Image (cartoon, rainbow, N blue to C red; front, side, top):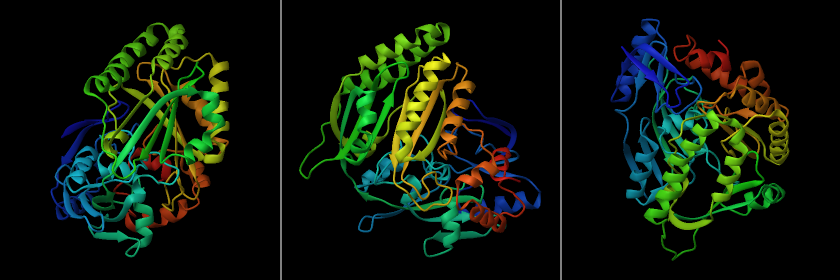
Length: 433
């Protein structure tokens, strides 16, 4: 028996049985045993979700034994990988084959199966989340069957299982559609928030990947534009000293200290944010795509993120700014805005609509409930869909209204897991019993 705890410290479980299978057959045997004993079983990734989506109740399956690339076809770009493979290991492995993921989020600590199951995404107006790069998967269901799923085989399960919050079974392997390895030119610079919001569509559509971070209580935003380089352009990465100063000293160590100061002296937060936003200097560099996409984030925080129709994101940010101004709340963490193309995955936050993501954060030693509740009220008026791994309060009935294929997902769930072996308190809340 062991204790499990997520990265943010928001969820934990004690006294759970821990299994570490090394093959799909061993996963199948573990599931069959759990069903026979009437136990709930949950596969657990790296624990980077803030919600209880992966909290085990009785049996915890760790997929560390399924954590490698098992097949890579450079010609087609199809790569099969064990479900427990961490994104950092996957990115390095793909690079050794001169391949890469077309798009990634901004951290690489998750496992690939955990990342797709919760709808993890990056940014790019013409690109979808990580799950859209999955072209096949192997799923162990409640009767111990091992289903191969793709657009051609078990297509309904494939549409449901790419973003399933672990509610359909245990994913044991995934086949990814990768692309030839590529370099990105990163351009980071502060701009007036009014300029960013006024030109948002041009910035989102005019770059391969665009995002911005706005510091509450200021009029400045940090913009990030990442674009593929022309043929013949080589890498020119950030220098070691500059990289350490920007990405470790300022973004982690100093940021931790300023947040601790915010706990003791909340009235200083607007001044701290003003200084932080003005301390950001422009930089430009060229590096391997995965090195540009992903960064280290060591300061512990709480996060809520909602997907809204892209055409309404500026209004959402404006309403959030207005609430912060009149509430008197002090927010030391920036607000992050990204974009994604519409997709056809049933429980994807971008299902059926071009999407913008608004993510809010609060330092873990500061109260966040009032802020997060207000944010949730604002985005709900725009049909906002919560990231499955980030804090929200919505339940099954509200989510059914926001996902056109919600009941189709439930029909697949009823067929694959009628006894609810893969349930936990979180899935009971968001999907119903």
